[in-house]
Image 1 (tube, helix red, strand yellow):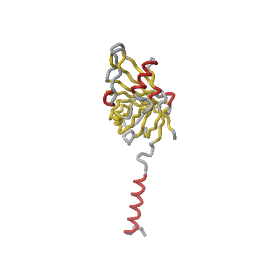
Image 2 (cartoon, helix red, strand yellow):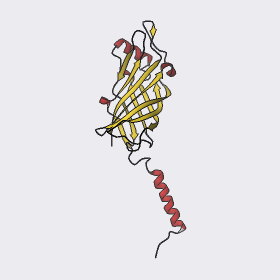
Image 3 (cartoon, rainbow, N blue to C red):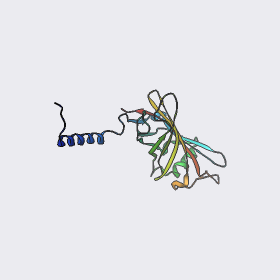
Image 4 (cartoon, rainbow, N blue to C red):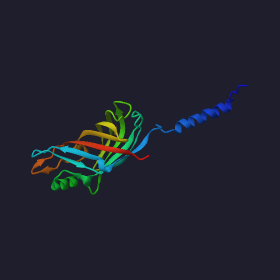
Length: 200
C-alpha cells in the first residue's frame, strides 16, 4: 500500500530540506587559496619629468575563496603587501616613498574583493579567462573603490592571476612627492601577479 506523508510529516520534510539548503555552502567546490609569497608580487609605474620609474613588492599575503569550476559563484578574498617591501631600485627614493606612505602608522596596502565578473565560467590550463575585479583598495588608511582588469589560468594545480589598474594619489590623501623640484605624477599604474595555492 503506497505511503503518503501526513500534513505534519510533510511540513517536517520541507523544513528539513529548507535547513539543508540554507546551510549548504554557496559552492560545493569553493576552496581556500593562499598566495605563494615567493611567486606573488605587486608592481607600480609612476611618472616623473626627469625619468619615469617602476617599483615592485614581493611577499604578498592574504587568502581567497574561489570555485575554479564556477567563477560566477561568489568569490571573496583579500591581498596584502607590506609598504616596507616596496622597492624602486633607488634607496633614497624608497626612503621618501616610505615616508610619504607613513609606513610606521600604515604598514600595509590592502585590496579587498567586492565582486568578480568573468568572461568564462571556469578556469582552465589551456587559455586565460578575463576578469573584471571590483573591490576596495586601502592605502595609508584611506580606502577607495577600484576596478582591476585581470586574467586567470590554471598552472600545475595552482591559480595564476594577473591584473592592472590606475589610481590617483590625491584620491588617497597623498600629495605627490617632489624630487629635484619636480613632482611625481599623480596618476600611478598598479598591478599584481599572483600564484595561488590551495590550502585544502
